[in-house]
Length: 159
Image (cartoon, rainbow, N blue to C red):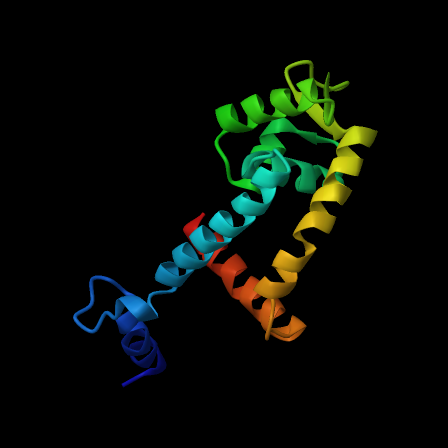
């Protein structure tokens, strides 16, 4: 048996088409469970602050990345364009972001955080601090970095 055969055999229990498949060993079982549990937990915190998860992701992305096109925000947030567009315009009405036309391409909308938006992000971060401390309880930075690395590989393979 060569190395490729061993690798295929080792991975069989992770593949739904395999007779040795074990759903609790399926990474996407855990990814979906973690994602949904996280969304329920964070939505509960965000609801108190009168903001939804999509808007929260937009604000966080802009805080880190600065000015971005709506398309880039949708890509980072992994949310469909119509949803991001609607949420972005709602954030603009609330004074949390400003939307302007790109200087280089009039078809592109650029979104930036306003001062009010920056303050809102700080308030949300302070309000959700304990939630994230609890979520990361018992994990080391090395474990989180390894998890992120594996998830990035899966994302690249899916894409």
